[in-house]
Image (cartoon, rainbow, N blue to C red):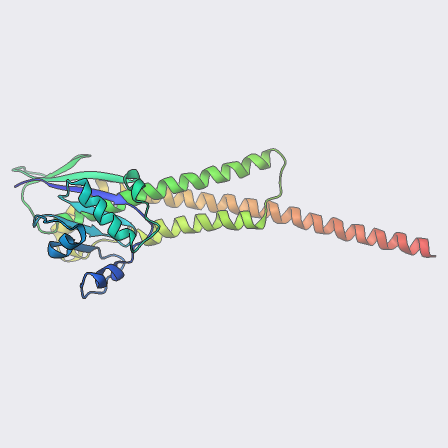
Amino acid sequence: MTPIHFKAFAITNEIDLNQIAIQCGIPKKFTWEQPLILKGEILQTIVQKKLDDSQMVMVFSFGSVVFINHSDSNEITCFLKYLHSYEPDIEIKNANRYTDDYSLHIKETENIELTDEYIVVPEYEVYFPELISTVLAKSVALEKTEEQLGNIHDKLEMMIDRLEKGRLRIGNKELARTTAKIVRHEYNTLAYIMILDKPDITWTSSTANEFYDKMVEFFELNDRYIILKNKTDILYNIMNGFSTISHSIRGLFVEWIIVFLILFEIILTIIKY
């Protein structure tokens, strides 16, 4: 059997699958954990090209897209432009920033063989494309989130440098903006990508569940999730420290103002009498 090739992209934080499904004439209500699978005439209409039956695209609500058996970059670009009409924040020029390539090979082998570039299985199962695509989609989405977390760390490092130089006052707006970035990061990672959730097929098929678990373990999704969660908790602790320092300084300033006003009133009283 010919190898099946996958190319995954993390292009945004959220994609409205239901809006796309309505335009494509797909009568189904999609939940967060269900990918939108486009193939056949629908996909051919989008990319404006005759396609093979093995070619399809899986779109995930958490902002990832996986192309299956699409070697033509023009097809990929055309589809991304189509998505851009629904999600204007997608930057097509930077689509390759968070991406991964993988392939599925079917050969006579006793055990499943996993590598960084491909997986070898003894026989084909219909659920392989969906499960492999799901793992790849989550992996590139995590890669994007990991970089965003790095940017937040850089911002906090600048704030720490200011504290070391004795510039202790931090504005409420700056604290609010930084905290919002941390909350958004946590929402995108822990809530929206749903690392711990599994596709529906894994609940009805033990072999599918075993295959998915092997893929998740190899791509270290759970370990990366735990690391991000721990880093997020550390960020919250740092922000709480900044907030405590800032409020203490403001409280001290108010206390000095009160002392000054009392002294001023005493001085006026002495002058008067």
